[in-house]
Length: 347
Image (cartoon, rainbow, N blue to C red):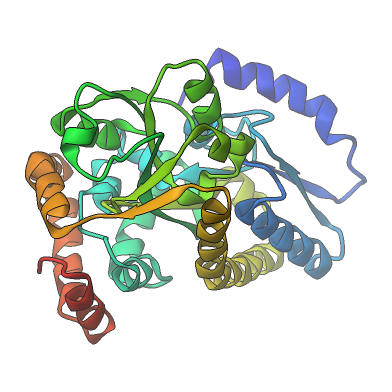
């Protein structure tokens, strides 16, 4: 990939921010678009501590949060190009270059926790196929996946039904979520997670499709009155490292890095459910109404967005077919069947 002007400028700036290295030290800078004190930031801090301890300081990890260098959608290219060594990238941001990576964004395929966890687990067929395709085409290595919850709709009023977004300006975070909103009657605006509050303040949008986990970002909760739990798709983040950077490490340090990544992944998945529950408790304490969808609401969303999956299957090709076959196996696996029935999810 060519290094775009914003990436080049950030690269120059980073030389001053990172500071000098001692002989034999390696510096790994991580771009994070969210605050370091948030769930994903704390997860990176755990990774940093493990790596620096296990390498006895030979590998230094520096975290640059709040999009100091890059917004979320800029991270994939920045890491691929080597402008920065590591970054936290939304899985959805790979769908333009790698359409099969959009599987988790397809409406109502991953609308309950068990199937998300099974599909995103290390070693699962779905994750293995997606990781391999990203690594082959993007010049990065995927170290671990971070959960960030199902999508909801933030707004001042109800957005439980498609008619509630008709003629509304809705913040979305990628092309697929944009199609979801436009086909269901709204006008989508692709805006980074970190700019949601600003978009509300500027009256650019009336509502926002996002993970509930972003509620505290820039005190977004002050701008809304309702959270509608659509849950039509899942937010997942990838922690990636430039392929050349990874290969430049000694075999032993590569092993240590991968072990630290596995440890960080186990930790963040274990903590996410409690984190999400606390976020909903916080919302309620601020007087925000949490709205569940009725069966009729869910059907209405499914109907208006049904063509998105058809389009995905056409664009994703053979790999998409493999992913969908693997998804079909999970829907009949004991890991997922009971929760699917409880959720009333279509098989």
